[in-house]
Every structure is written in C-alpha cells, then in structure tokens.
Image 1 (cartoon, helix red, strand yellow):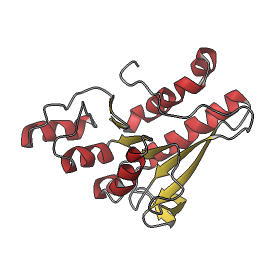
Image 2 (image 1 turned 45 degrees about the horizontal axis):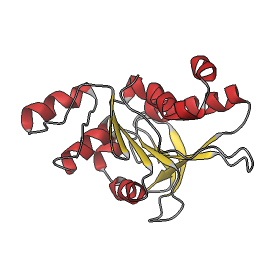
Image 3 (image 1 turned 60 degrees about the horizontal axis):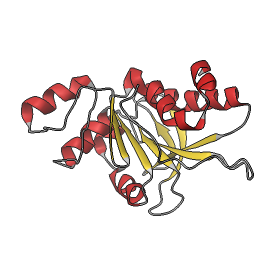
Length: 196
C-alpha cells in the first residue's frame, strides 16, 4: 500500500511514554464498521507492542452517548474548538460523515499540520464541499461514480486512499483497517506490522 506516505505523526516518546493521540470523530448515524475497525486496529497494535503507544478517544459535535446507524453506542467527548486537538483524527462515514459537522475541526487540525483521515461518506462530503480540493482525492466507489457523473472532479481517483497535504481521503468501509495500519506504519517495525 504505497498510495499514502505518513510522516505527520509525532515520534513516540520512549522517555515520557506519552502515546500518540487519535480522535475518532462520530455523530448520529455514524458507520459502526469503520469505527470498530479503527479502535480494534489501534488496540491490536498496542497489544503487539506490549505498550500503549497509541491512544484514542471518540469526539463529536453532539457529545455524550452517540448512536450509530445500526444501534452501536459510543460515549463521545465534546469537540471543543481549538482545544484538545489530537495528533491525528479519523472522521468516520455514515450519516454523520455526510453532515460534515466535523469540517471545522478538520480545518483547525490541518492549520497545525495534523493528519486527518476522512473515510467513505466523510471523504465524499469533503470533496463536494471543497469544490476543487488540492491534490488527489478518493472516496468509496459507490460515491465516486456519482461524483464523476454529476460534477467536475479532475483529481478524483479510484485508489483506496489519497493524501493531499494533511488530509487523507479514503474509501473506508472494508479498507478502514488497512488505512489505520498505513498510518501506524512509521511507528512500528516491519515484523510488528506483519503481525498486525
């Protein structure tokens, strides 16, 4: 998977033991499959490394108990403007990805050159709302076809993921675990990655 290089995460501090922080942005009707794939892959990476190198929290514009599209519930912390920004953020698809309430937080993070990974519906929403995003972009195949037919997106590709600055757009869904592994690759040995 050489489609995206990730050099934007900070080095894990062996001296302080401070983990690399991730936010998983959810909203009402979020995609449970993507959400679980992110958290499970991060947990498996920590298990393989026998340390908590990666930490995550759920954030939302509507904090508290947030329901996914199929009934999964997560307890989300508030996404407070310019406060508590993680090293990187995943924005999951589903209805919450289409609503784009997360877009302001993405802008805050990209101003600080922090990585934002937009999955499926979130990637589609970003592509539509930014009109002409710089660099290449991608999304889930079901949306890519309609984007190509209904509007002009010359930078739209059919790859699983594309990086443009601090933003990674991704097909999401079944490719979610792969993009998480790709993001973690710079912080794990090849042997540990193979096990993951």
